Image (cartoon, rainbow, N blue to C red; front, side, top):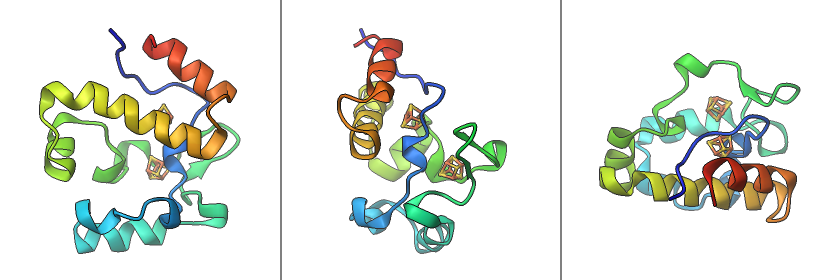
Length: 116
Ligand code: SF4
Ligand code: SF4
């Protein structure tokens, strides 16, 4: 069975371009939506994303909507805990495909590391 994990040298989910996430207001509160939009920087990337390391500069203080966590997923997407793994894998694959492409090295690395 594939097991979700966040792989190094990715960062696809830090590409926040709202044009690619049309349903934001359905799972973010109005305060979170305001925060989300305030983070969108050049090219749609989060202002906290370090492009050199592909890591978050505020990782321990990142917003709720950046966290892969059973409670967060239940609150935001009404996903049951037993579905979190598959849902997170699908979210990552969608995001990686959109940002880097479905045959990108990032996708190959993700699939290999999660066991697809
Ligand atoms: S898209 Fe997934 S694997 Fe890539 S950085 Fe985000 S959580 Fe990690
Ligand atoms: S706050 Fe950090 S984890 Fe969240 S989108 Fe920005 S760089 Fe990524």
